Image (cartoon, rainbow over all chains, first blue to last red; front, side, top):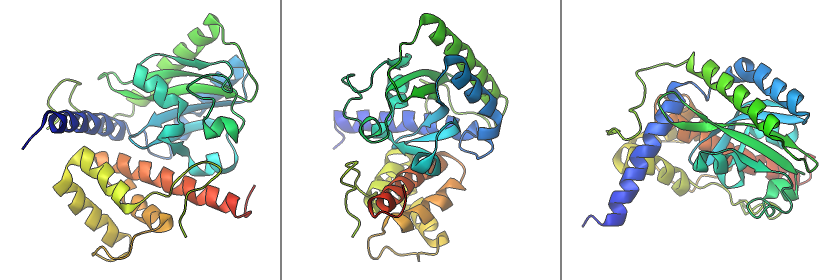
Length: 185
Length: 97
């Protein structure tokens, strides 16, 4: 018997499929995306005076680093993390910028292994949303010491995030996922 | 043998997790067919036998990553989780920083 929960789960599955199809059609998982977005992440780190910046793609069970600057060690080699450690997933879920000035005291991040063992202390991420309305990931900056982000900092990041989406959209392949709210089939 | 990375609280990915990820997004029947094909193309045989470890799951994920459609995204997800576990396992064993 189909239950209300089954229907809700099936609907979430269709929404996830459409969003993931959009990510694939934008070719965001290709190795060459790093080159295309490298200037943007370097500019983000430079203008905000922080050592690390990334364009992340938030998938169902992991975040993928589509482009990164200043990341090294196992994080660079893995090119992502499990989604439950992802600060960016919180920005994508809310659809709003996510800002953490001191990750050791923020209730959503203080127990995160990336804070406990990799030294992340501050973070600001702006959601990247495709022209078809799908949340893809974020443009984010990260630091190893607590940091206060000004309105001007966030405005700078918003502008760079818009630039990143523009560059991503230029590479769109395929027919496109259905618009959110349309039947995903 | 493939236990949780205690320091990070990270359990190894499992075949059931991977199939579940695929099934939730593309449906149970399609997921089973896609998984069987990827399993075979990864050189792991066509049938399900012993549980796959993270290194074998990474090989299957690498096949999925070469696919079109949402299974490519699921493959990337699985690859990141498997690589993370393998790299942190190496760190835990003292083989890297």
